Length: 292
Length: 310
Image 1 (cartoon, chains in turn orange, blue):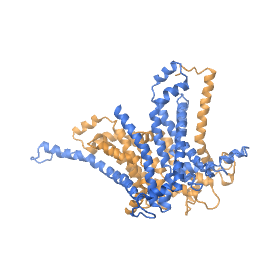
Image 2 (image 1 turned 180 degrees about the horizontal axis):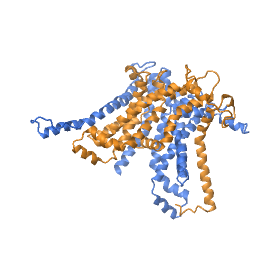
Image 3 (image 1 turned 60 degrees about the vertical axis):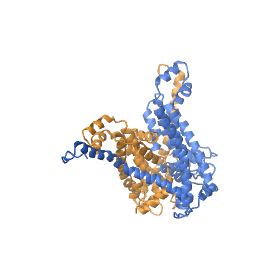
Image 4 (image 1 turned 180 degrees about the vertical axis):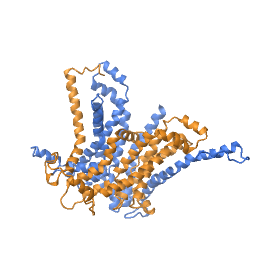
């Protein structure tokens, strides 16, 4: 469009300035909460007074962070969010790996070994992406009880795998549909089996979709609150539940700096993943939600 | 797992061997899929049915199977708190979807003007989507806290009369949910629209401009109509997020003041898990499912239709 719009005229220049101003203003709107969270988390409590929301700390301190990590009260206990951070890791890592592996095998079977009714099965599984989870909470609570997994990390892993597989299957299925079938057919003629073809032909080209699936599942499960609050016990809470308890615990003076430090701690893992692998994050978002 | 090498007894001809290996080949993919399908049948469809059955019983603290027909639904219909929750969902969902669409489209169009540092800006607009709604709620609760947040800051600048205390105002608190949710999700809508804009053939734009159409006119008459499918998907995703919104309410307002900011998702959780009203909670969960289906079915229908037609 450059040859149509003459950039050098005064009007066009003014338009350009306005454009950048609007974009920067929007950037400020998105950045402000993060900035305030960060600033507040390194302020001593004495500096948190009305009207100092944006003021930089006079005497920056990491004390709120250490307190949020190891001492702050979350409900009845006062051992910080650190232990719950590790709970989240212990839940997220196995759940992500298992659901990604199952999704990959499902996607492979659904695209390269089609059979009568396989599309119907896919549609059947896909529906799991869309249900509001409130509709499974009560039966799930009872089933976890029967399995002896109430309030356990294993129970939460199971729940996340069950409801994550619909998404991972969708990712891998849509990715493998685009992988040429000729190679697979040739390998079949040569007598290569199901797993051998997966291992030698599909897996080597799957790196991008594995990254998308891992990031999507990691973000979803790390940020989960509903399953965490419904199915975890005192010792097995994920960090999001602990953060909410910490913020809502009212003993003594409200320590906003500690609240903000705890929120930063809960937010950092997914933020880091986003900054490092933003491209794949966006791809997962669009693939996970647009392609129905 | 390669097929068994030729160890077959002479009696088995090559044809028999192939058919045995063929049977395995035919069954293995189904065996691999079977656990997921079984899980889906039990944990998704079975549980939906189970919740529906619970909603027909008078279960309170624990599930009981004494059937009372649709009495729980009737109770729900006369429950003031349920009506507050449902009308909140209409207000919250409507505003959330509308503002996200407008803001997302606007940002995408602005970003599509050959902007320097486009990548950096995009990253900034989108990062809230990586956060948990709990973190979002905690941060906005702090910003909207009248005593120490934005209100106090603006008053500190000399505007003593400035009021922004929606968080503690029962009539306005639901709008704080809109603010926080828009902050979190609008960047994502921007990304969807930007991808849509990049998919539009440049020559259409050039032709329209050569015809003398002004830039806003080109966007309004040519570009935005091209984005209709994106709008459609975005509306579906956003309304889905709105119906499921639970964590944001818990962290930002706790459903309060009173129950002024309850949504169906928090209503269901409160009644089923803390107020010992399992039957009523199940009925509300079924109505939520109905809401999702009401959005989903037209969407899937049109998707399938458009796929079949081209």
